[in-house]
Amino acid sequence: MHTPRIKICGLTAPSEAAFCAEAGAHAVGLVFFPKSPRNVSPLQAREITRKLPPEVASVGVFVDASFETIMAVSETAGLSTVQLHGNEPPELAAALHDQGLAVLKAFYVTAPPLMERASAYPSATALVEWGKGVLPGGNALAWGDETPPLPRRSPLVIAGGLGPDSVADIIRRFRPDGVDVSSGVETEPGKKSFDKIQKFIRIVGQCQVPGPIKEPFTHDEPKSPQ
Image (cartoon, rainbow, N blue to C red):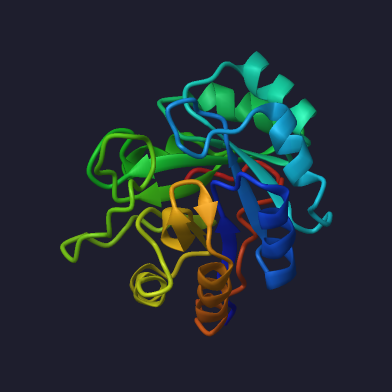
């Protein structure tokens, strides 16, 4: 049994990155999507990633960006991992993986791209959200109690609508390898609460999932579809 890995997403300040790393996060996320209140420029992201030790993954979140754009931003910002949060094809995930980047691909329970598509992306870790709201991402909406069991794929990351008060139940229900939180540890959109981050990490640290756990935020060999 192991504790799930933790990603704190939507950072906008170097001080947030330093705190997340010190508190025990395994990855932090930087959003490159202009419509998001957490959007940062590649140069802003670079200042944030410089505060991270090597063992904490720096994840860039993109929505239907091109291969060239993602690679250019990744180089400038110092990213180790990319998160594809739109309708990107499997070929893009594979091409990014071949460049040495770890890849997360977002899927949804209630909207396209559906979780059932995850097997078409053997080069990526599946990140699953409830899938309601206007913007790509969790939109601070909690997972519904009627959610059916998810098709098991490992590594698996659960995201969307998580927070200190809900994450233990989500881990119990879905047994993920990792959890991803953004608005659930904020005082306002784009402004993280250090108290909430610390509480979230402490609660996840008390949860157990079957092992051996597979690291969801670092580069690995392509996985066979399951």
